[in-house]
Image 1 (cartoon, rainbow, N blue to C red):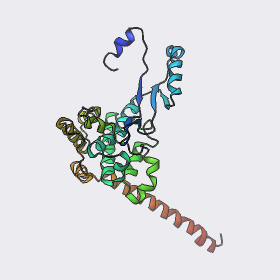
Image 2: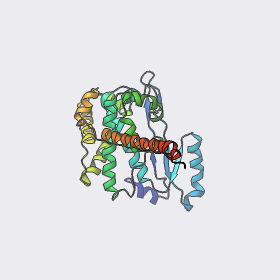
Image 3: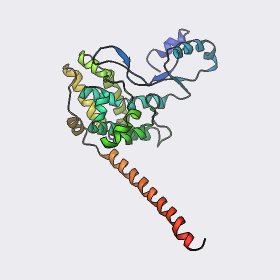
Image 4: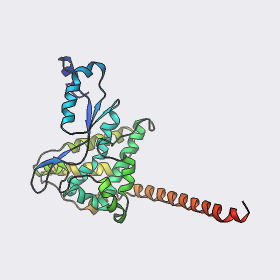
Length: 277
């Protein structure tokens, strides 16, 4: 519960618990506010005492055309949204639109490494995988699949970009707006929350900590978006390669499995008929 949550309920009001899987940002040219990407709200399933009066409020939310997911347990979605949105922090450091940001493979490798580190931390935190962060409210694919796809070379990633990168054109991280306006940003808080999970469970998170340090420095300097280069972002994160190695391993396994299937069918078509079967 958030601070004051209990006293609010004690006043006779009833709250909806939920998680937000969408952001609003400014268009870089017009300054108009728009939804950054397709996302949804995740709300608790209504208990019996909330159904009677709560339905009208849910109908109001649904009439705004915002997708709503109803789940019994919200914790995986709350953390999953934070993990999925770590790219907003790296984009706040480099500047530009999110689409342009993710076209650069070095930026994607840092993002993939941050996802990997977070998933490893939550595997330990959830007692070896009893639950894991769920990013389905923020994007259509699992965080593990997203991590691997991000590591693909540009030649292979570009055709898939429209599936995995659904951010609005010419829109950057809302954290850029805060930095340009010399305001603090909540992304520093969310990145710190993820680092705290790693610290409490003794899981190293060098890429996430690096981004947190750079974001903190940008906030304290008050000089707006630092516009660091992808090469510098990658170097500061320790030049991560673990996600790429896992992708390579999986591709080799898939290639090996495919080769075995081809050999098997060749044996069926060629060798077995010659034995008169």
